[in-house]
Length: 331
Image (cartoon, rainbow, N blue to C red; front, side, top):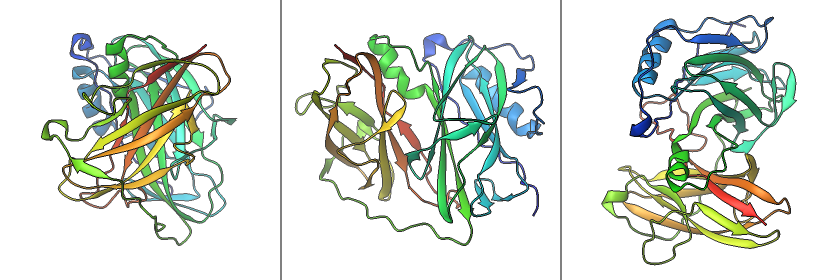
């Protein structure tokens, strides 16, 4: 079987304008997680282009390269893997902010969080630090994959342990996460059929196209975000998920939520599937049952456009949006 060709998918996070300090034009530091790792060759032209963009708009780059004789790259966003084998890849993650930060790596397969092996060690999340203008290469394997058509989502969260209640910080956490998706065929399989829920909707404010927020405001300023909460163990905290359409056509979506970077249900469902029509506003009432663990916690949701879509097709919207993170203090 042919060795997988290069897959380069780059995501970046823009900083607020007050922090947009351009970085020097020197070559970034590239550090393998293991001295023994056989570092793959990444497409230098593509990476250099995004490095320049990263200097102008400091953020994160995330690049994926196939790394196994048991998988074949069929397109820029599509792999084929032998049934029962993991998807193996090298992930180049670069920090283009002008200072160092902690980051957290999360992986989801078919919109559910999965464990992965990073440099041979099994974990559900991996925390690491990158200095300013530093890049690092990680060797990552998924669990063995069953036959079917899969959507792999890779997330890199900046400042995962920052529990500041500062509202501007909370607002900007929606942009402090890099994400990319790839499709994986395992055996001969077609995308599964999904039953999408039609939620009640209203006409959207044109100024709010493409919005995705968590809120507690049922009336009045419905666009006031939910950023902090003080509560107690076992409390049922009610909140609202608000989404507006920004496409000309109806768009299927998946919703997932995280509590301290571990997937948590929305109204008892690991994943909510729905349809978002053009120029409409969807409001989904939800309830979060507060765990027993006291202290400061982080809660947020993800909007994933076109679940199980063939991402390599022309004009397929593969957007992944994050809500701002909510600081929840359990007393």
